[in-house]
Length: 586
Ligand SMILES: [Zn+2]
Ligand SMILES: [Zn+2]
Image 1 (cartoon, rainbow, N blue to C red):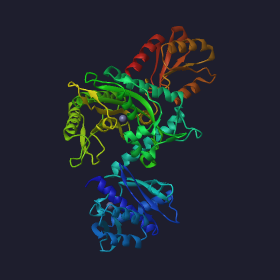
Image 2: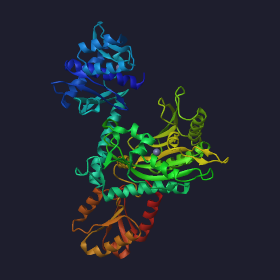
Image 3: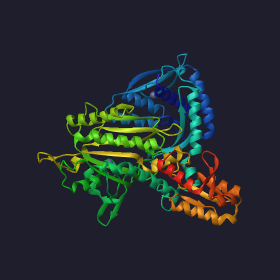
């Protein structure tokens, strides 16, 4: 029995429990997301509060223990709607009517049957469900919290009560998950970013547009520089594009149509602009202004560029709720025959990058290929070649990949990389996508050996997904204790007493001249207090100086991560810290 079926069945048991406790409540929807689920209800005039969760949980456990059978049956459309209307399930009626628009004639229902053959509960759903509630472990689920959400994400609609919950196969898995959540709460980037002064949210700017403080900017710049370092000897060139472009550009690229609701429009007299939602169309223009021949191919562009999208709240988790996203966006234009070699290079870069982040111990890759029955742009032959190239790359690097079949015509073959962070949360981060569509839309070409115009393939690829999201993943992955190369402050010089300020200042300047991110504590606080405030900022090397150190030209080092205390000559310390930074050790 797979866990999805269990979770899905459990969501019905929750709805049943709600209805038993609040007969007037109306059911809305309850989708399954990985590990975390919710169900939206309209409680009408009654109020459902967080403290009611316990009681609801108890009720669910009781229902599970009643060995209820789940039985499927179909009703024709009119009967179904009649039944739902009788039961005042307004939201289900709306959903059923939407099914009618899709020419559905019969609607699936299921009923829960008690041992005494009474029907205890009925709902519209095609399953799959467990056959009996005894297949569910009453101790392996937990109702987590409540929130509010508009029906269909539309603020013109009614506000519904959302119940979040999670469920697993066993109690042990649930306990592990609860432990992980507890750990995640401690690592919450919103707490850490305030404590470490990384970001600022200004209501005058907008809550969804965080501003980077100097400390945050250091992390971002280091990440960006490292990404570039991994690419620059692989024949990539940097380009730059502005934040605004005419509507026509995105009409041509089809982004205007696809993302219309998410685009920020800018009116200037009679002209209509969009804030840039994607870098791709801009890079197409840069390519197009050249007369490339096959000898120039592939052409590779890089731009860590900020794009603006108002993604619908439903697609945003609390971690990514920003409207300005800086993609580490790389586009390369190549011949179909060059795809595999290019993909190999990108895979090498991705592995190198995530090894440095300490995330390569566990990951998997999704290879998305086309649905055989669909009609796609470009010939089957080209698709075969692109899919084959991605598969070969996946196999050459021994990537743990799973094949995924796309059902939509506008997608293209791609590799998506999923990594797990230090507390085993999975993140989709890197991506490599072969695109045959945009080169057609922008009529791109280069001259081939026969002096004919040939259409390039575009490979979109991101290593970190976006710098904002990646920084947040990193803040929580490292629990705010960054490897030295990423740390906003790498060392702090702390004189025991103001009398040693001159020597402390000398050490400080020496480190600064060696490009180490160091500060000097010149306060008159006690040594303990100075050390504590350095630790609060997670500064790894706390360099205490006193008479002995001055005499020996040394520093007493307190290592925040290892808690070790050692004494070293200043020159030696500088030599070692520079090695640690350069090697990007974790
Ligand atoms: Zn169901
Ligand atoms: Zn792109």
